[in-house]
Picture 1 (cartoon, rainbow, N blue to C red):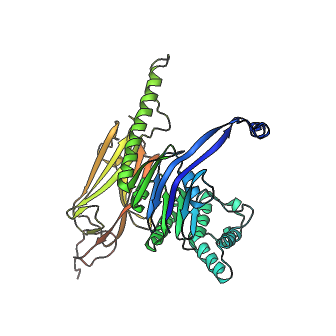
Picture 2 (cartoon, rainbow, N blue to C red):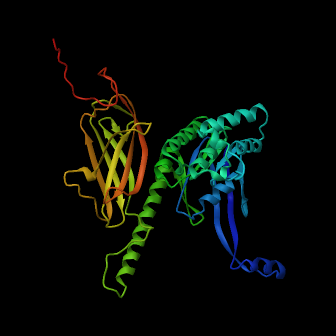
Picture 3 (tube, helix red, strand yellow):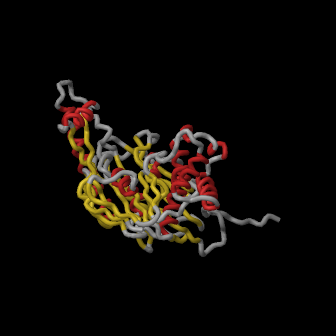
Length: 407
């Protein structure tokens, strides 16, 4: 169930004009340039490992995943795969747009070699997991939204209990409920020993899911190893890149002949991004279990790349996405936003945390100065369990109260 990449390279011929392809074939003279999408890819994803792929758009991640899935072939080198492979690549890949959701599920089952009772079992698992209505599944998939597509694709890909699961940015589509359900399904497959090759721009998901990771840059592996080491190196690169873009934009603005104006940053430069969230108690860092009425502190670290002001909102959330408590820098006494290029750290202390027994998570958002537009988010991260071992009260939170006997 491992995946082995040996000297993989992928190149594409690029023609200036469509007719150049025909002229090249007729004359035998090269009329194209070569675009190198991947080069020198050598690594092994071990059986049972969840392996992450990170990098900028256009770095070659999707090409690598398509080669891993077998949907395209490398120009040079080879890929060795073991076991049954399921892939979630482009939305709707493998689906016939004119056929219904039901028919496409049966088609996917047939591609996996299932028939009879096995096909029917596959059909039932996939439709149940997708949570799509009968009316929706009877419609042609060309009428589906991107979220519906994602539900059907993920349900069909994982209904066979694959030995190898390849996921390319699929979990960024759809509602939060289904994203969490899909993440739980990936975790369940991992517990069963499946090999997972996971690509995402959500670095929180990569950190949470993957034991190892590779950073792809310019079609080559820039770093590979323990997830935290690779993600940290990639984040440092992104900080340098954003700083360079910001400097270039400001310099270009200042060199204009027009009267000086405030520098307008390109869309590539984010105002601020969430770097990490750390939970501290007397028992240690990022505990998985907390006692009711225990002191707890949360530290949120952010990287700002522009002078534009921004607010930070965070919430304690239940697994069903109900907000237990949320607050924002906008709600402080002064309500002043954060501002300034560089690292910002916010610390929030909860003396005697009054949560009662249950499962909880954190959600963090970077908002603009109005507190309306979301600039970055990390939702449903750092799960932890609260145990109320000293009291018998039940519910979500402890409320101060007094008993009085009225005759």
